[in-house]
Image 1 (cartoon, rainbow, N blue to C red):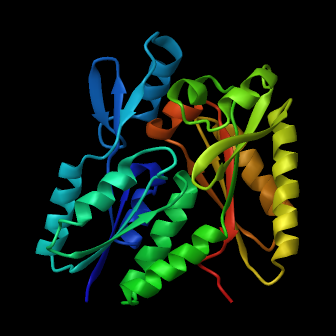
Image 2: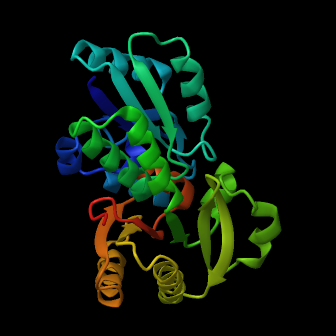
Length: 288
């Protein structure tokens, strides 16, 4: 049995991570006006953010097509894989997982395990890297899925956006009507709950958002004293703040592993520019 791992560009894995964990990554399409671009392959962050700032027509996205999926699966089968674990963007913010589950019912060239990350970005990436690591060790795929479920269940995500304009426009904010009016001129704090995005609070500055997230991580650490914790700081074209937060988390939580990641166009379409996020979970690289 030979197991492959497939994901989409919303995981924002680095080229080094893709190679290390032997992952197949399928691009989400970003639409700027009348032009379509495959994320990471054809669209740079600079071009995207320039468009976001200056063009009246806001960008949109198109999910990975089932044609792309079949082509990738067929190629992996031809390379000798008979099992594929396919980890993707949360069903709560895209219908792709439903479409994939329907597709695999009729795909008979390999055993496919569709897995909903119930998140995006670094939370999705951690799942993909864990699956890749276990697949390289020839762990049984059912055991891999169990490990993925455990990691997913251990994950918390908080992020602060400059405003709710983009999330409200794209319909990705689940409790929009209840909270949008009270979040003007502040930094809305959001989280993933059951794979959907919810606004949970507000802070006047990113510094205050950082302090609130730090308190949540501290509570998490106290609730799980036997766990090694992995903290990933994520930015949407906010590199200076990314470095400050990563340094501060490393100082506040010296026992944790602290990583950095970025949001690309496909997610920044919804969050807007200058978003800061933090993902924390049980460290899959340092399990006791």
